[in-house]
Length: 107
Image (tube, rainbow, N blue to C red; front, side, top):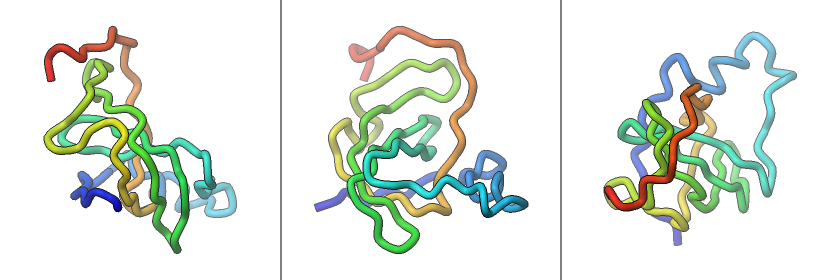
């Protein structure tokens, strides 16, 4: 069973928006792909296990603070290992930030 997530609007970081002028170049996720979305100031990386229409279903493999790159085990009730549905419309490009040490102790 998957966990329901209200993804943040990707805004200017939207993958679909980025490829709007060149849809032929759009990298449609496949099983095994790692895709990203935004949630509460974090980048959430999801490994795709299945695709249903324009939605990927997969496991959360990373939770990264968008402002400094620190990694967490959980954000709210979303945790590493959870299975989620990620619509293509919620996919986001990852921000550029300096690499940071894992910060699991401050969950």
